[in-house]
Length: 105
Image (cartoon, rainbow, N blue to C red; front, top):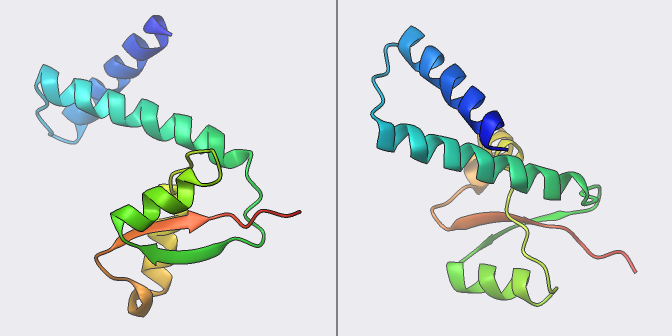
């Protein structure tokens, strides 16, 4: 895992240089951590059936309650949210936006 992160850091540095984005070590560390977090969440979401999911806008408190009552913690998959935002700007607001998979019994 450590070797994988080092390789990723190097690729990220090269990409940043090619895009003229000067990143200090702290910014790079944050970027790597964010990447790891997103990858982990994508792996979780890949196991969830979203075919009949509903989209909701919720406050932070409602978000915590809704996700917590199922005994699991699922975050939005950022690409799906970004696509929804792009395609449905009239339904977007500043509240936290999450995808809640419906539980199929």
